[in-house]
Image (tube, rainbow, N blue to C red; front, side, top):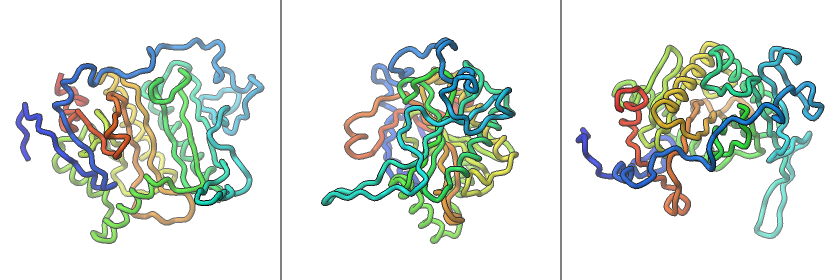
Length: 337
């Protein structure tokens, strides 16, 4: 449906992958303090002195799992999280039961991938180093696939309102001994679509976005970045490899480099056109284990924190988004000021 420039009629939009609904309500962007930069406090640099990520090999308090290119000249280091949400174990998580309640022991993986420069975020890294960060994360996915973990996710917290407690750029990888329900629902939906249409739903999404191009922000040879049709949050962006692949860790260097280039570009565009918001980005991969899940198409999501969540989101899981994805794409391409 063609939109009038001033049309503010809300829409209910269904995510074709997850089946979940969002409310697109551009009229609510007229409320006070909407789409302003969100932060618990001002984002300002912290001094190198006292930073736990400075001089890691000499600190004596960190185990270095991996360092690139080597320990003395490191540019990227992998270390355990000092305050892990889960602890690594040599055995499987043990089931816990008490009456109708069930759980597991907190066995899993929680690592940090740290870049050397104290002040240079992912958006500002040299392209080759940004690609190398993703390659290191690929390797950590392989390490997490140890027979004890079922699902792993790599993510970045950028800004105090989205979970970042340190200024120094770092990324996290967590793995859990089960497939999270949100991921399971997405996988189930992708599998149903594949069985019905004999093709990947995200490949179909790419084809649809490239045909209309209204939500495409940027693309290169291997990857595409677009504002999702049913975006949950204002200025949400998906970055996806064009060629179908279910597992991020299996991607060749060329694809990884192209994805990294688009992610860097998206982050710089958000800085320039959307007030440099606090944000998370994360990689949605296939579950660990065997060679199943061929219907899954791995991808990265960039999720800025530009609006408050309220009772509707928490009570129903239905997000209200005040930013039209078509207009978001225009803004991030610099065509709307």
